[in-house]
Amino acid sequence: MRTALLLLTTLLITGCDKNPPQAASIEAKTLLRTRVAWDQTPYTHYPAGRPELSLMKIRIPAHTTMDWHCHLAPNAGYLLDGQIEVENAAGIRVMLNAGDALAEIVGGLHRGRTAEASAEILVFYAGARGVAPFMPAEECQQPAPKQGMATPTAG
Image 1 (cartoon, helix red, strand yellow):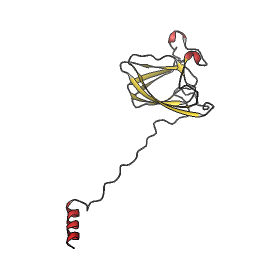
Image 2 (tube, rainbow, N blue to C red; image 1 turned 60 degrees about the horizontal axis):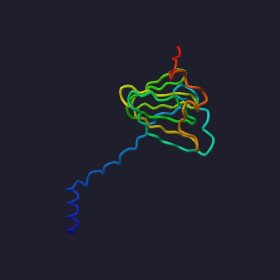
Image 3 (tube, helix red, strand yellow; image 1 turned 60 degrees about the vertical axis):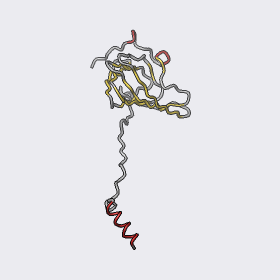
Image 4 (cartoon, rainbow, N blue to C red; image 1 turned 180 degrees about the vertical axis):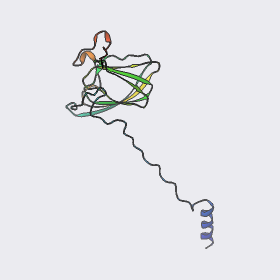
C-alpha cells in the first residue's frame, strides 16, 4: 500500500496527469502537377525501355548561360536557391525564383541563364535505362539558334 501511494504521489508531482503530447502531423504539398512543359508543349509519352529514375542537384554559378540542350524524357525541377531564366529556341522565356517548380521541355531546345547570384536546382528525371538526362544541342532533333541566342517571338 505504501509503495502504491508513493508511486501515485510521484506521478502527480511529475505531471503524468496531463495528456501525452500529440505526434507531429505529416504535411504534404504538391509542388507541381502538369501535363505540359513550361512552354505549354504537351507531354505525349515516356521513353521506351526499362524505367530509370534520376534525381540531380545542380549548381549553376552566377553570370552563367548554359549551352543549348534537350531532354528525351519528362523531368521536373525545383529551384532551391537563387534565380534562373529559362528560354526555348522560339524565344519564350520564364524567370524562376527560389521555391519555384518547373516542368521541363522534352525534345525541344532550351537553356538557362543566371544573373547576379548562383542557382541551385533539384531535378527529377523520369527516363529509361540508357537514356541520358540531357543531350547537347548537336544531338537533339532541332538545330540550336544562330549565334547562341534565341530570337524573342512577338506577342
